[in-house]
Length: 130
View (cartoon, rainbow, N blue to C red):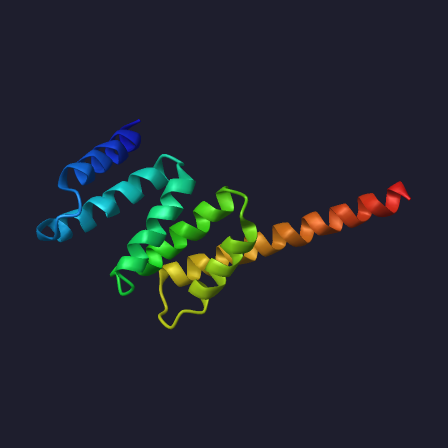
């Protein structure tokens, strides 16, 4: 409940500030708070959209790897596995070593294993129904 309230408060604050350039740093911070709250409250569709917006506006964002990871997890939760796999592949191949690269590789391995297992089950079901 608290994270949903935080997301709503961040949204209201952004509406109040509008797109005033004098408040651009505050707006950027509010978007970060909002994306964290959306993600934590399982609003994955909105979180993924806002992450894309944040990263488009700030390609060198200090938390880019973390946000890419969150975007991948959000896409997977939404059933958009192919997009999630591509997101995790890019992050796992990123130049820097770190927790997000390692975590992305683990998520990628898990998604690929799940897809492989589902395909094997479907193939077995097809063969047994013939």
